[in-house]
Image 1 (cartoon, helix red, strand yellow):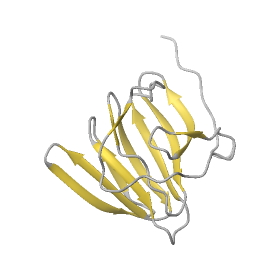
Image 2 (cartoon, rainbow, N blue to C red; image 1 turned 60 degrees about the vertical axis):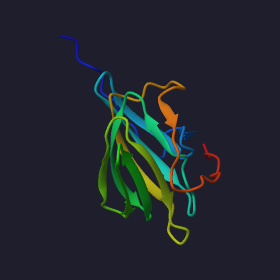
Image 3 (cartoon, helix red, strand yellow; image 1 turned 180 degrees about the vertical axis):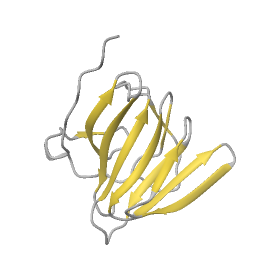
Image 4 (cartoon, rainbow, N blue to C red; image 1 turned 30 degrees about the vertical axis):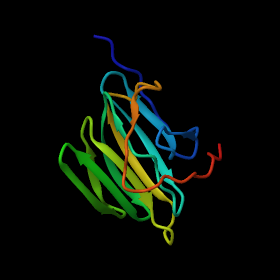
Length: 141
């Protein structure tokens, strides 16, 4: 049995790109066929686009900043606060949107995506959320 290669990364060295929801994302690590790990960030006052995922689900851990997330599955819908230490799931097909509080440091989220993010333009499907998305700063590196 062939073993996957070890992978080592740091947030500081990871290339920042724009996620389909408008947040800045820094992909950190991938275990082929299993999952991927990334850090997402929204600046103070930033509001993501509302989306749902076609084939992946996620687990989030909030590491900095405060804000709120809206999630909808069928008729179930909720908005919950985000703060450092909050952990949440986004099951397959869940519509979601998140926002960073204006008077907070940037909202930072470490997320596990299962299976790994497929890297295509059809994974994130636009949805109608409770807030109007606003442009966020461009990635710095």
